[in-house]
Length: 238
Image 1 (cartoon, rainbow, N blue to C red):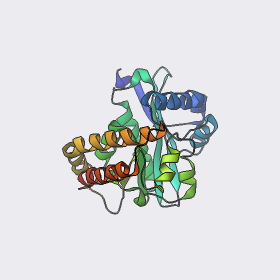
Image 2: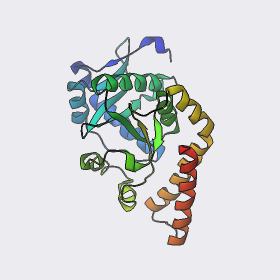
Image 3: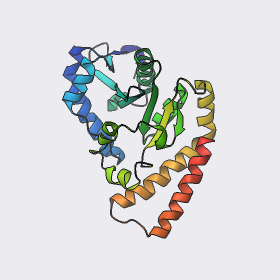
């Protein structure tokens, strides 16, 4: 697709007409990937648009292309959530442009806040690293109960709680305005560690999806898995 015909901007009240299309595509995309996301409703998306906390991509002809919105927690943390691109426009670079715009909006609205995200997608992880995000453990994220309650509609919620909110299928990434690498540095780090990221995701998917299917292995193997996961995470973080 020709990105020159795509406009990426802060969403306006008129864009609420796309709310159901957006949430339907979020759900369909999660099912296609075989992973879970916190379920969003059209009303919730519309609320974010009304609050001026959403970025939308549309064609010059008025066709919906993509969307993302801002969440705030404890006055200290910001999440850029719900990134979704219409199937016809994927692999065009528009997701990266949307992430850049929502990141910019977050920095404008909340210049002192830490910006974080949870994702199962390697492509999103790369985009985040290009913006200066770094992979972190869950303990460095907001501990606001409202944030974690948003995970209840995710198919992986039982796994998250069984791990005492210390781990799940998603990988956590964080941008701290007071302590962060420049985007070029984190981009280089990601490129160097990309095989480790990929291995981390495969290990998580292999183990956690088995639990979802009720075929979890014995506890001894569980401990072996945890050691492997820690080793891979160490390689990603250093």
